[in-house]
Length: 297
Image (cartoon, rainbow, N blue to C red):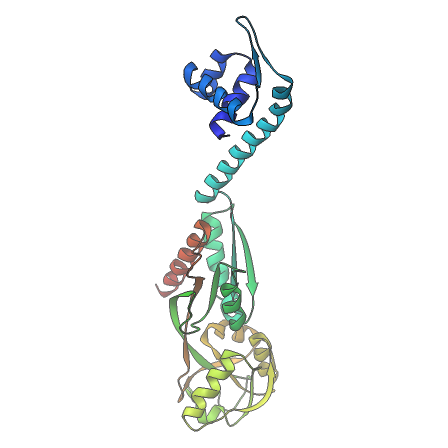
């Protein structure tokens, strides 16, 4: 049976008048009669008892009416829901973002999105960069914000910006007077960094090694915010993405440019290549791009 046949049946059953039913479903009487006849043929029996003077439901028709009404209502609800999703009046977007982005640039993007699309629910996962890639790859979230993971078979990556690492010092440190800090200077002090297999730690160690240097790791932890607090307390120094500058300074640490080595990574938006994005996720992706462009103006 088709939705057209079901609408025709419900209209006739509720009005018990072909003339009124024709007006309700916008069909001519021959087309309406054909729809009812085709429905009866498809189910294998009569749904209406007809005489020259009256029209009534058969017992089977009466039993089927509430089912047909529910099917039509469900169909209409499904159409409305899908329409609302395409019009961004309903839906949900799940995002995973590495902490350095989630704590700094993401809140403004979320605000901009909410102002445009107030009825779309947002789900944000604040996880390390490696988990962002994993969550996008496995379809647990539609969008991820992370460092460029390199070539991935099923991932798209849209670059937002290149993020250069900065040196982080406790207030009063003897290097604080320097406008730019050399890696050889920074790595000679007790160094605080993220635990392996953090891509941030691996990148720092690789770039340092290329210059014949190696950080003197004294402490490692899971979160950059913890790194900042440990530095601010005076336990050592560190190097973190420039994304974290505001967060580090709010904690009480001192930030300076880092050179020799210059450490940088591309930050951008990850999505799955094969499955594509929902309309809501596409809108969120554009807001992320627009929001970052606004920060450059």
